[in-house]
Length: 397
View (tube, rainbow, N blue to C red):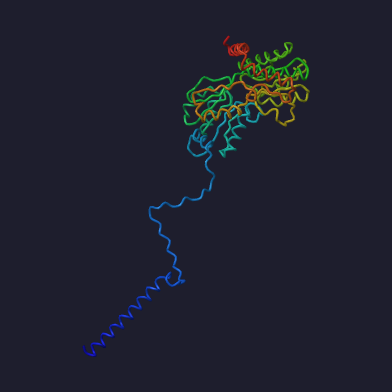
């Protein structure tokens, strides 16, 4: 081998050694763990979201839906606007402080509590104009119409067909024939007023005297039932107690004549009455105030808040058949399907719901009244007598 050949071999061996060293250095620089290096890796980029990946849910900005409120809307929201507008049809003044106002107050309070639209109220509706007045009310976009009394119920058979999307409810008192598009709540006036008579008898025992006056409208059937049942209850406390019925209004359904009602009470006091029952609407408070001024016991008809009022009238008690209290009880039955359009629910006579109530009773009076409620629920003989009073009042013999 020549010297040139040997020189080339040595050069190739040196080059190979250098390449090996460079390869090792490069490998060492690529592995920080091998040499304790402090190089920091760059953060990995955020992955791009996939086209079909769902967007995150936004944070809720409103409280969850109240299921009870939703049930109300599901039942009554006729036009699907997400709220409820109640119409009230009242036979007397909306602000009578008595029977008619009780239903109006319920509609207003219920609507405000649930964030609904203010109710639309049509009041002082007479029987002759009831069809037109309730048709006008229905045309104003209401979802529900609460009819306040049976005296304006006659056109409901036609109106419920004309406006089938509206939910029609009648607090029909003595009752109205079942109608396919109408849900009704009724009560039985005779046992309610038997407890009234017992309450009044207890009041006479506490306050003195033996004579009472019943101030009504015009001797209508339900007034006869109320009066005769009240007298029966009154005389169950003491057979010597008496009560006279006095009509103060024009036929039919005029429970608002304050002048006639106060004049009748003045005459009754002059003849020895020491207790008055104001079976009245718009004339309720004037009679109550006159009785207070004259220092005699006085009972109101209808609303359930009499004993808690601060109106300057010294109410002795009330005979409760409160349209608002009934509507509040009827509402859950409607939502649950127990009370439907075309059906009727009759409220029992039950202390705390309806019937006689004393504002500041003595222990004896309280005991008498509790016994009266027990009797109308359980005493078959008494219920038979009360049934006879009802049949006679409505011409059934």
